[in-house]
Length: 127
Image (cartoon, rainbow, N blue to C red; front, side, top):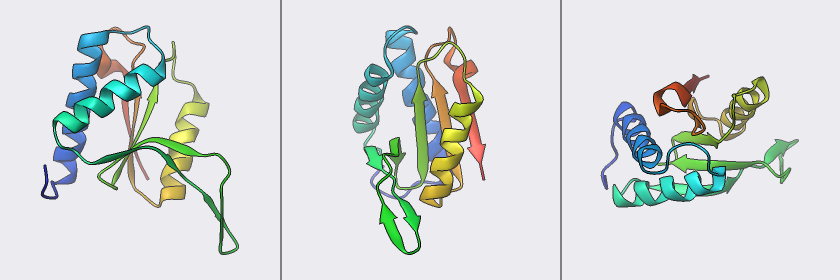
């Protein structure tokens, strides 16, 4: 995927990688395990990404590190926030919306690996 791919194709490829990780590992592990395995899948598919990208707050023209970290920024265009929780709470949804706003991006995926079928744990957010 060395050439820029269409956004929908990128999103589908990331979801495919996440499904592969879930197929191999199933639910019940820590978020960090899923994050590292998803990163490995993305590398195998040559999809560019950054892990744990710092997301500073811009305040009066100054960038301030407030501790925000994106789990994955894929191809500089797609935020992927990972969870391994029994239920996605409103705070998790607010988190990804905050990241989208800070990064000035439009689309993100919230993927919860702690579900029997991963398709039930994927939610797309669009600003």
